[in-house]
Image (cartoon, rainbow, N blue to C red; front, side):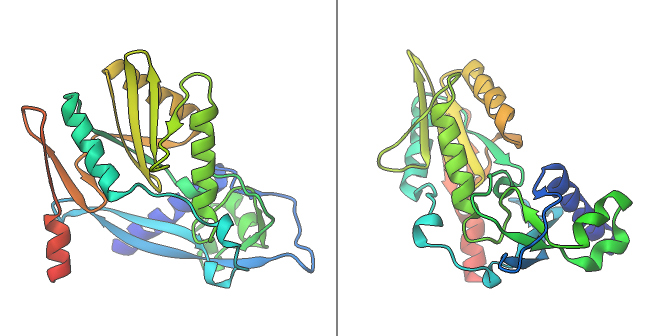
Length: 258
């Protein structure tokens, strides 16, 4: 039964990659083309109460076998701890609840800037639907980035930042101190958004402006709206009735002690 659940998670990951146009069909590697293998990484996700949330399988490139990129092609910002704390304080100031969203397969949504072929793990072929098997028979050229490569975070981060700042419907500006803090203002209306890789927190001046931002993001990115935030960067968030927040790292501290 457990094995069947893991296989189901693997097939879900393959389905996402293929339907996401991660690969460019009809391309054949040249003698000097870079080809690296992919593997499956398994993870049992746990809730903030230490209960099993779900089984997750991620198809990743063997980045350790990749030709290393230059440092300027790999670095991307992640929100500072002090920015996160100030962000919570601002939400309390305006009596707004902090909400959370998660980009689905974030690193697979950025468009590739270089040619790289990926050889998919063939041991799963016997579990695959017939229409998926062609992707496992030969190396496939990446059309979008994928987890495991050293540039995946930067490709996604650049795409997200560029789109947030350039869209005409609801343009954001980046903080000069912390590039992972994005702010939209329109008169008295505002939205604050912070990102740590694919995990984001946000709040706005009203429910309407928050809904507008959610709709706008969905036009470009695949994401999951997770409602009120309870867990971020190993930190538990609990909102009191008066609008204040209790923030603690109890579970993280216990993990370190153990």
